[in-house]
Image (cartoon, rainbow, N blue to C red):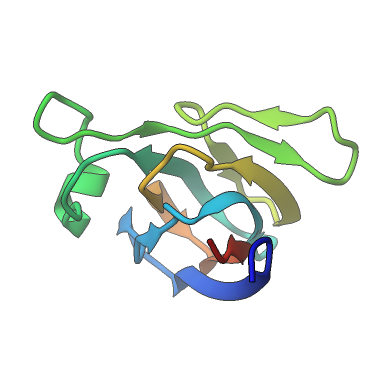
Length: 138
């Protein structure tokens, strides 16, 4: 049936306590997903959203590496649903300095193939990122 929708829940990062990339998600059938980014009060890290149009899956090491003609990913803009105006630039990410962070974001992924989250500068706190998407059945 055209226009039917199916939902999908995905965990990118599950209480991660180190630098590195999460578990990538194939978003080629999604237009938009909702993401929850959670960290406790003492968290110190930077969390960045990365997207790719690469034809093949990127390894975890490639997600954490700088983008290039071989490692084809870039930052993805996230919009806070709390106020609808707060934007988190993909290359800047969410910088936590001994702070908690528990927010929902909307992401436009309509032309991306893969999506992932990368933690850098980690020194404290368990970082979690979960996504909920509505997959279109074509």
